[in-house]
Amino acid sequence: MKDLVAYQIVNFLEKKGVEHVFGLCGHTVIAMLDALKDSKIKYISVRHEQIAAHAADGYARASGMKLPGVVLVHLGPGLTNATTGVAEAGLDSIPLVVIAGDVPSYYYGRHPHQEVNMHADASQYEIYRPFVKRAWRVDFPEALPEILDKAFRLAVSGRPGPVLVSVPMNIFSEQIDVSLFQQRIDNLLSPAKPSLDEETAEQIVDLLAKAELPAVYAGGGVIAADACDELKALVEHFEMPVLYTLMGKGSLSDAHPLTVGMTGFWGTYFTNKMAREADALLALGTRMSEADCSSWYRDVTFNIPPTKLVHIDIEAQEIGRNYRTEIGAVADVKNALKVILKVAREKYPKGFKRPEVISAIASYKQDFEKQREKFVKSDQYPMRPERILADLREALPQDGYVVTDVGWNKNGVGQQFPIYVPGTFITPGGLCTMGYGPSAALGVKLARPDRKVVALIGDGAMGANPSPMATAAQYDIPVVWVVMNNAAFGTIALLEKSHYDTMFGTVFEKPTGEPYSPDFAAIANAYGIKGVRVNKAGDFKQALKEALDSNKPCLIEVYMENAPVPTDGVWDINNIYKKRPSEFF
Image: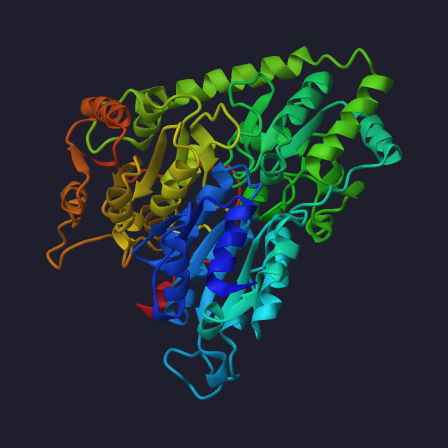
């Protein structure tokens, strides 16, 4: 029996368990839209392809990353508009399958409408090569079942990430023997993941046992591997402090007595001190990236060596990339921790007690809260960002999701906002894309309709692309956006100010020098969702509670002082900026 390729693709997606596809129409994908219209898959139509990619990213994260998020885009500008979102997913290890329409295969090289062929014919798929795990161009219908099967398996296997399947539009409308798809539909999505041999586990356990101050460094790979329970059991057995990367935040509840906090440039004095003073460090599922490691400067965040580093990651090339490694292992973090915990319990059944470590962590947390207290309780308006975060934490259920963009809402949340349930902190870590948060929150809410979802967004990001509000209104997706408005690209403005004593090009001003900002609450109302502008600090928390209780999409705009996030670490860029010598003036 034969059927149209587009309908068989949709049937394949249904059988794989896909429930949502995020995309934007174009003449090359109309056949797919026809196949989707009667499908049980819900198609979410957005106003810009970057939104589709970010929403699919948020959906994949909130779904536990067992299935990739699926994106459907048009060729040319559709594909290029989505690049930033797909690249963010690539750097954050988020599985996506991007299905892109392409020019008719029989017109390759003749420069049909919107073909990208400046240097090679039929080469639009090559645009994605730097940031996807693989990019395929489908040259004939019979290849598509095998390619889709590979795409879904590759996206979630090893280090997860996005893949691209570029399909000439004529192939969507061709007929294919359905048996070719049937042979691939029930293929195993993800094989058993590599574990750790007991000999290596014993070496790791002995190294940790002999250390005076062992510590765990948790990356996003812990959450991606669903290894948070194993992490908790291991650190409690050894009574080891847990430090984390930005992406690893939430791998152990911030309320746990062994959780210290985020390291690096936006880490605190205590978190960085504990990291560099550890004599053994078990790093799990992390790239040991620049911001988390203070640009790898010695004696700031880490001091490796003499600290002995044990690094476990699913991706071999990450081990030893930035630091000398005592023991390295390529393994799934969950499987590895199971073996390490088994060996630890057998060799050291009584575990370890480090009451002085627990006491030091508790004292640090108390002192840190005291330092923040005057800002957390401040009634000033524009509001202090610390109060915005504190009020949000009180209003949001512990299992609610907070989705951030970049700036105070990312760095401040990483440093100062407690996360209690693994996976409920969603942020752009690798590419740090401005504009991620407004869109990703849509996908998070669609994946977890039972949870509250709040997106913390700067005015720069919300102004760059406010149209996620249109999607929320159209599909009644009850996301709450909090726009922290400082009339600037605030983080960059302060960075420029500190080095060049100017904020040229980074603040929003009229020619007269007056601050400028659009009325985001009015824009929300124009999109058909409730918009609220908070005019004093005391009204913010109540507005937030009402928005969350309404179970409707809502935007809350609050003016915020452009205060810097406190930093203790080092970022090498601060040593690069040079002000022009005075003799040139």
